[in-house]
Structure formats: structure tokens, C-alpha cells
Image 1 (tube, rainbow, N blue to C red):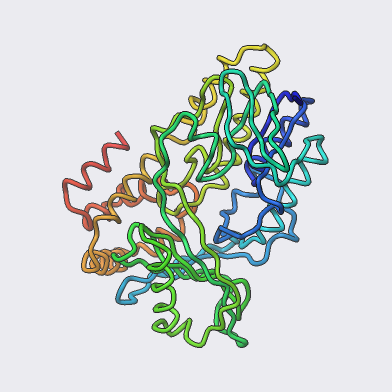
Image 2: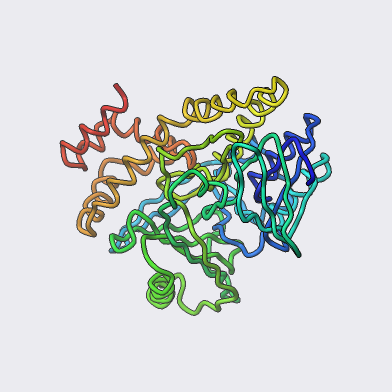
Length: 392
């Protein structure tokens, strides 16, 4: 039985980043990945906020497009336009980027094992049962569950997660159809609190998709109807189709058990409003690496309890706001959404969103909306009062 200091289950971007940090600190690290190829199939819209460059290495070669703002569409296609002077987000080649991060971890000294499926773990003894051609066992002082929404590691001490379904097409028009500096986001009570997106890769190609509380058949039907109905998307040639699962954020999820920790999608480190989680996952991977290295050096796994506490200290307030926004959108009818768009336009919210909006720190915008009294003019008084408590 091979022994490691750290065994990371899942060689996605968050797991690979954590593995790199630990290998750079001199620990012997194993990355155990069930897939035969990193990053495949694509299961992400690939739109990452500008903070990505502050929290991880991102070479320009993996940036397909830069985005400065968005057209926000109501069900009746009333539009709010928001824009920044500089890029607010990047459209990434996620397959290439995921492979790059895994290679960085390997180059730092981590050992990567592809086509190795984890069947079970023993959190107390630190033993992982793995199947490749035959069953083998790996032992580690620390086991990290970074194995995504259906995490085998998480299921050892957590109930099955609740999830959204997501679907996305890569489409082409053979002609200029998009202003590639802007994404289009469509809200609709049929898919709330999810939404439909068009993310341009160029002036003629885009990723179009949505996430919602629905099955794949319903999502596919919605995308097909949108392509046929929306003027911007008519005549699209569908090049590829992608399907995935987005775990719902669960603030009660247990992140540490004996010598096991969770991170990324496996840890429910997901934005409740958009389903994105990569930037939060990278930040939590850095926190975890500092906590884990001290626990291993001091030979005291009880120190791992500091990991969820430190993550909570950094993200609790932001996630609380986003959960409230998530609940609000889930309750809105199309009529409510139309009223909201009209009121926001009337109140000059486009300029406020353009100034204060941020993909990853949405609480700043919500707070500004409350300070100016805009949200109180839109939401029912009791609902507004409930959200305003967050700022007391």
C-alpha cells in the first residue's frame, strides 16, 4: 500500500491548485482522478470574474474573450444595459485551463493518477480504496475531497447534495451576430432562480445555455425554443451540446471529518445566485493549504477544524446575501420581473449596477441599492426588511 502525506481525490481546477500548493510546501501528494482526460467533457459556462487573475495563475492563451458588461433581459425583453470601462470577466478555454492547472501541480511534484476510481474511504485511518485495473489501497495523512458535485468523499459523512441541472450549446452563425464585449442574460419565472445566457466567444460564435431546477429534457426544450424565438439566436448552427450538474449551496455541509477535508463543488463552495464556484474554490484551496500544512507539520489533525471556520469568516456574509437574493428570485412571477425591470430602469439602476456590480461580490451592489432606497421601492416591505437585517 502506497503512503502519501496528501491524497487529493479529483484533479479538477480546485483539487489541482490545492495539490500544487501542498507539493510546493514539500509534501508528497497524490492526485486521484477517475477520468481518462482532465477537463473533459466541458461542464461549465467558462465565464470567470476578473478576480480570477488575483487568485490563480491564468495565462492569456486560455482567455478566449474578455467581457465588459451585460444586457439583462426581462421575460418580455425589456433590457437593462450595464457596462464597465475595463474587462469585468473572461471567457475561458476551460478544458485547456483545467489541464494546465493539473500540469502545474505535476510540475510542482504532485503525482497524477488518471482512470483511478475511488470506491470508498476510511476517514479515520486515512485509507482510500481505488479501482483501476484492479482494486488497490492508498493511505494518506490527509485526504481531500475535490471530486465534484457527486463526491464519493463527501458522501462518506454528508447526505446526497441537492443540485441544479445545466445545459449548454456551442453555436455558430457564420456571420457577425454579437458584440463580443457583452453577455446576454435572460430571466424567466419558468427557470428561476436559474437563468438563460448567451456568452460570445467571438462576433459569430457563442455558448448559449441555462441552469434550473429541471431535468435535461426540459432544459434542452427550453434552449431549442430560445434559439427559435430569440432574434439574436435565430439561424444558429449547433456545433456541440454539453450537460452538467451544479450543486446547490448548502451552508450546513460538513467540510471536515477526522483526516478528511472537502473543497470546491464537493464542499458546496458555490455562489447561490449564479452557480459559479471556481474563484471561491481557489480561495478556499489556499486557506486549506495553510491549515493543512500546519496540521501535518504539527501532527495534529484536530487543527483541520480551522479550515471551515476560516472559510466561513471570509465568505459567510456574502453567501448570506446571495442566498437571500436566490430566494427572492425563486418567488418572483413574470409580472414581478417585468415590474422590477421597469422600476430599476426608472430609478437609474443601470448606472449603479455598472458602477458597483461585481460577479463575485454581489453584496456590495445589494447594499448600495438599499442605501439608495431602490430595493425598498421594488420588493414587498417584509421581504426588504428581512434582507436589510444583514446590514445591521
